[in-house]
Image 1 (cartoon, rainbow, N blue to C red):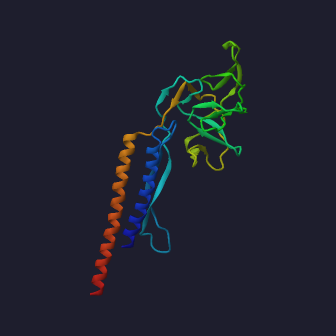
Image 2 (cartoon, one colour):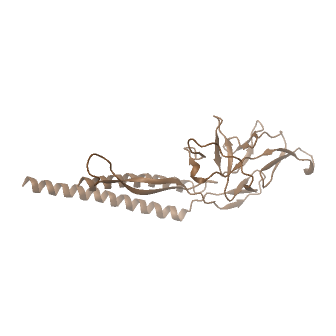
Image 3 (cartoon, rainbow, N blue to C red):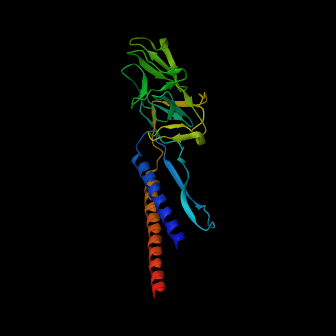
Length: 246
């Protein structure tokens, strides 16, 4: 009896956690560069002093869907999208690096190149500073050039090069802020000269709204099934108590 209760309880718990993950994906259908979160289930034996006759349900291989999202042309000079595999590098306040596919860049009040949420964008030689009042040009290789007001395009001065990386997907871990970082103990990713950009373009979320809706319905049904298992176990327990007391 307790085996049925344990399987139903752990299954319902994991179904609720997966539903929260699916709801987060649904909320980010329109978020640029978002990577859908994925979770799977698997059964594992309960290890103890007794015989291994009980099992529980746990999340297996949680991670992110690394497929590229749809590309939308914006025509804005500071909108960039990574073509194929690869990531933009951000400089975090503690000096560490984080990686993102969100390429709607801007120049801050201090002349530093940042994302729209004011996170500094890292170059291969460190943070990128832009001369005040200049227009920027970003090449497909990530090279940033600045053109002063009234200056010809041929006189553009190179500001730096975006640090474009392409670490193995298995080495990346999503943080609570939605940014990806190297797994614990791994060194920061090295710049990859093979990564290319699409300029004047933004990458959308790779979440498929139809698939997410189907997943939400399936998770709700799965949770109901586990709760039915618990109710059946309770009914069986009551019937067994009646037989023993008669």
